[in-house]
Amino acid sequence: MSDVRAAPRAGAWIRLVMFGVILVALWYLARALGFDSYISPERIGTTIRDARAVPFAAAIFVAAYVVVTTIGLPALPLTLAGGAIFGVAAGIALTWLGATLGATGAFLLARALGGDALRRLLGARAGTLDRILGDGAFLTMLRLRLIPVVPFNALNFGAGLAGVRLTHYVAATAIGILPGTSVYTYFADSLLAGTDGARQTAFIRVAIAGVLLLALSYAPALAKRAGWISVLLLSLVTATVPRVLPAQAVAAVTSAPASVVDHRAWNAMLADYVTNGMVDYNAFQRDARFTAYLAQLGRASVATLPRDEQLAYWINVYNAYTIQLLNSRKERTSIRDINKVLGVTLKSPWAEPIVKADRRTLTLDDVEHEIIRKQFKDPRIHVALVCAAVGCPPLRSEAFEAARLDAQLDDQARQFLAQSAKNRVVVKSGTVYGSPIFTWYREDFGGTLQGVGAFWAKYLPAGPEQELVRSGRFTWVDTDYDWRINLRR
Image (cartoon, rainbow, N blue to C red; front, side):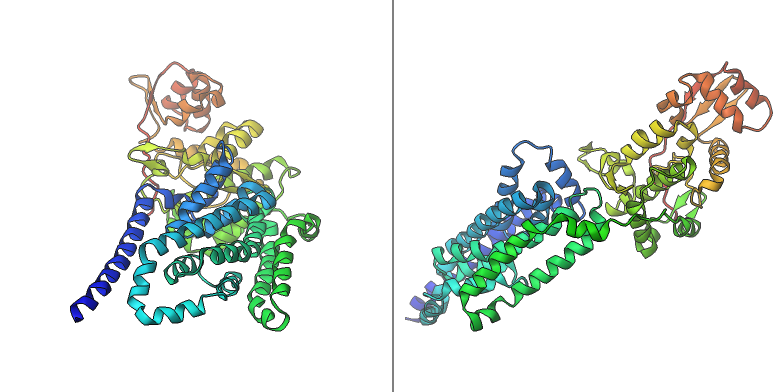
């Protein structure tokens, strides 16, 4: 007789174990396909900006949300992304739809694979569970959905295993997640979208969101005193506030002009963490001053500044955000390995919209090609911009400053041309061995070998080498460009 009783119990355990195995298998499949990396905190900003250019982005977003939620992966990054990609109103609608469908999928998955098994294990006690989750299941689920700290995925699977009635579960979920979804989407629209001034408004939006989420936390207590009608009204108001809050209310607080960036902290860090052009990237990552400096770069407005102040600012921006790019991706081999999968580069690292400067979101390519090269037309910038490679010009152990900019750029040119592994003149053969930088950007040096030679002549010491390059009658050979990271050991 005991064997007869044991059989159903053993089968129930097997069903529950199978549920866990299937869930873990789905997680690993998502990771193997790289799906989870696109919604990771490190990459979500890039994913957001790439998604804006994708056809049918709304349908893809909802489908992705359903998949993520059904298999129990963290959905909060997607919630934030919804606001950043689609704006507040559309973001709320699409996120709410994806979350409701995905939560229902997780519920049905748990009920199909483990719900019956759990009841077999409970035996007679399953009747007690039915009484608890009977007609009162809707209010129980609604109460839990309204409390922000209750784990979303755990509640999805738990409700399915416990046998909550499907109609109660879906209704409570659809109503209960709307306020929280609205709040998160509201501040994500500014915090993650990468729009101008986003960093300025972020703290204010987070504060507003915090107040609204705190109000939701008191919803169950309010229900005991004022009834669930009052709670539903509170939820409706909370969900509506982000959509109707006047933008000028935030803008009024953040409209004060930012001061010119103070490069002293950057100067001190470069002195501490850069030796002979080699960089201690980990030290920058640990230093709170670096984060504060990047924030200053984002707040500054430089269009009205004198030319040298602007150029010094943009060179510092490029070099600082190159370090930030390497650190954000935890890359310590080569900048060209960023976004590389199976030997194929899916997206140029210089096309990552990581730069927050001049109250805009830019890429390193934007800073170099669209701003510095086009606006300033000074070939010396090519010895000042450092792309985190050994083959680059050496990163200075000091910040560029307007008052000394000409002297600093001239000194950079002398230092770079003095690196014989990259640049050298062999008078006997009439050959100049030079960095590919002078080939890639030859148009900035006049477009000819004679132009490159004239540039070199300014910075080489007097002698036969200088005379040869000044004459323009030489053969040019590119030296090998070392793309290994310029890592200080």
